[in-house]
Length: 340
Image (cartoon, rainbow, N blue to C red; front, side):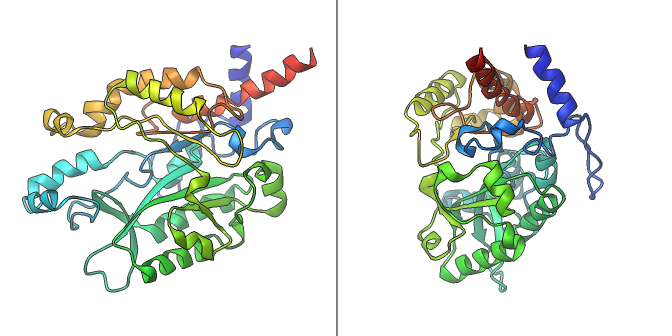
């Protein structure tokens, strides 16, 4: 059965993505249209019951070590960052992805973890992605995502704006206006989670669910409250403790009324950073532990009380997205067994 699923997946997905417009690297396996390629009986399953791959700190494939240290950092770090070497070290621990938004989308990532901030001295009130250091402008990221969605009209994305730094009301209004300008009619109005199926969204020609962890969501119909997409955080360097936490939070998941994010990530402690100062997050913590985390993912099953969205650091280091997507085949097997 497993071999059959893999053959069927390859036939559905194709084998290679076409080159990106930017000329960046191609991917060995293309999952650019995996939602459109799901079997018809899954088209009416709530998205909260499907297995969906996501990325942690999705925008952090590029951070600017020449920019000021972000407002998400402590005063002590800001003082240390006056030494140029410190920012180089920060960059190694701030970057959690190798792939751009477009490359992640082509790989099959559909949930994006977004943290944003204003930048000191920026007169035009532009908003930037932030993780210790400033990343690209939010507008540029939104336009990259929108370009992909226009080319792939049956793919749905979750954009989770969950951390805001140095933002007043004017900054929020500017960001929300940027979201409207970028996606327009692709935005999906907040409603019952159980009504969010691929078929319903395709009929309405909606492709973007925006989650906004700030009271401003109440003023806009297309902003979903953050409580609709809980993402429990293990905050550990131990794979064993992470997996126990993921299992526990899944068992406590509400079967109705919300999506659920399983953050399959390890978080460095101060001593972790001190020990692997030059190596950075990828070489010190992620690279050697990601295969074990992926093994846990392979044992999971989607559904009302199963996994929904699973996020990872450096989604390209292992076959993460495809592994998560293939979990949806278990829903098809359940259907086949029910007919027996």
